[in-house]
Amino acid sequence: MPALEFKYQPPVIVLPGITATGLEDFYPIPPEEVWTAVLKKHFDRLSLHPDDLRYEAREPARIQPRQPFGIIYEDLVDALRHDLSNHHDRPTPVFIFAYDWRQDCRITGSQLDSFIDEVLARTVLLRHYRDADNKPFPNMRVDLVGHSMGGLIIADYLVRMRDAAKKKVRRVVSIGTPFQGSLDAIAKVTTGMGSFTDTPPRDREREAARTMPAIYQLLPTFSGAIQPDPGMPGDIFSIGTWQPSVVQTLAEYIRHHKARIEAKDLLAQYLIAAKEFHAKGDSLNLADILPEGKNGWMPIVGVGAPTRQAAKVIKYQGKPWFDFPEPEDHWNDDHRSTVTGDGTVPFLGACPKPSVLEKERLVCVSPDEFGLLEIRDRLLAKTAGFHAALPTVNLVQRLTTRFLNPRFDTDLKARPAPGVTKPVWPPALKIEVIS
Image 1 (cartoon, rainbow, N blue to C red):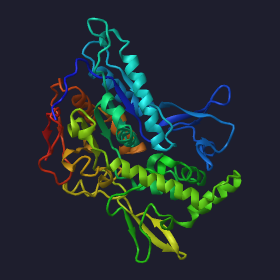
Image 2 (cartoon, rainbow, N blue to C red):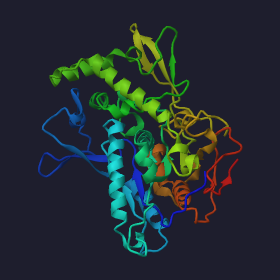
Image 3 (spheres, helix red, strand yellow):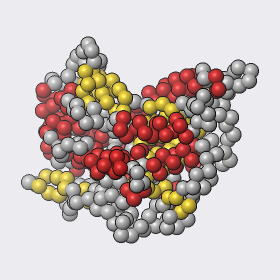
Image 4 (cartoon, helix red, strand yellow):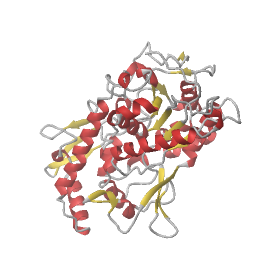
């Protein structure tokens, strides 16, 4: 499908990953921080009510998103604002879409549609985004950049709000997106927050995680993700596969808040919604939505970091129990190996269904891509993990800029997916293949 001609660089919206947006309770005066990426983690105030998952269990409250984690996203946004603007007095607008990462991703997708409308309306107010006759540019669209769960929200938005998206979205970049899930989602529910945070798991973390719909929507669905022992269940979306402690925690949680729903019904509600969310994302038909079809989406995938590859379902006291083998990475020894990942999302979890985007279209980035001067980003990757640090990698930013604005003639080198010798990268990406 040929590229559409656009007179102006479209505005850009950046969607952060899960847990990367701060949350504030706006009921107190002044508002109180209840979640930040590093300092504030009030898990008891983050839990959602069993009878209405849109709202907090501890009321009265009104928790709303605030700005994302600056260390990770500030550099990416600044790079896009600078590199996508041809003149200082004619800046390309780049907006951050802060969202409540606890909520069902489908709710967030609906909110994204409204935010896109706002961004478009604000952009055409800029003098350099108006035609000579002082009328707003009629074909204005947005470019979307999604990190981690942000990419899933974009995919869900494109599917569920197809007619609106066809008129509003030009190109998409996903960075470290778990299209087919992550083992860390199971770890969050069973043991705590997993590697999504930098603190050891605690009981209150685990209890809070078990009440958040979005975490279940990150459950892994790729082949081999769940490895049941003989006689053990292996369907991640079946209640019978989950260890009894999950239902027990939900039952106590329901009792404490005097909710009306039964614990098994609540868990079933989470799992059914998650299964439907995955199925919807797997049905994404980019040729029917983006002006350039599959060439309009660039998926950047992290490799080269030890990552959980599977979860075992073992028998413990006669009941199913999740057990996690040690994280693995074979890519550094063999670039054809799919046993790798970004430390949070395994490579197979980062692969979309072939009907959505073929493996040949993936652009891979490893920790080796950190430049000599990216000392701060190297330290961030060591503390928060390579997955969290992906937006700070200079190569990721340059790939994103090049894709969104092909006029740049920067020399780039990147790796294809493991086992791929002839990548099918978008025409806008004139980059050298590292074998």
